[in-house]
Length: 110
Image 1: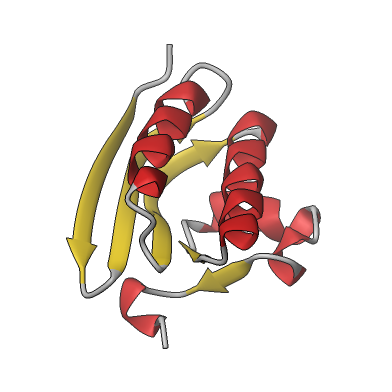
Image 2: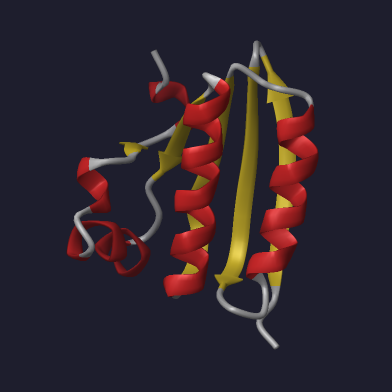
């Protein structure tokens, strides 16, 4: 079973969820549950930080896309901090980099 660690941090109207390890079919429910808790507080900006993520499969990608859809429906902004090249490549191959708001670092939120 893949290990996924999450850290959540709130600052200035932003909530950042930092992921470490692997986001795949076995760990996606952990992220889904954490996002549910964060979304209950209705932060204006939600950051999903992938900088320390080692691997992400299609289930992990679907979890991120679902979070983006919920944010849009709630009038919230979801930003994804780019991960390592192998993780980032998934967004470009699926062309989701054109639909999702990808940023290079947490401070890039304007």
